[in-house]
Length: 101
Image 1 (tube, rainbow, N blue to C red):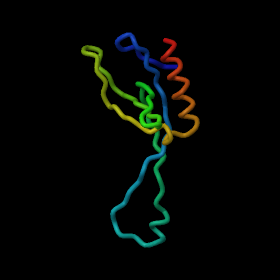
Image 2: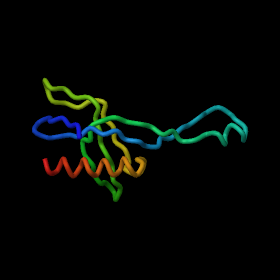
Image 3: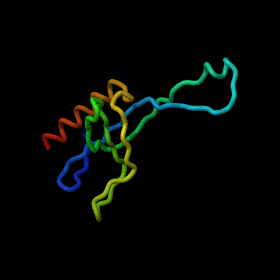
């Protein structure tokens, strides 16, 4: 599994599939309204961490980083449940590997 080490912490690279909200603000009839679906998104990023807050699990990722003055860019946080089952498994596997490293 591809990884990068920053400040003595190993972060694993993942290709994640998740579901995003799609919105439209124009007036449409039933036919077009019924075509409105959520988008399936692919995110390629390093797993920063997984945390729990108020009984819900969240995932933080980053896609860029600086080697000169360690910092993280292109950061996101997602509720765990937006990820498909395969991505959730990959996240949990990477998290366990991070804790062992």
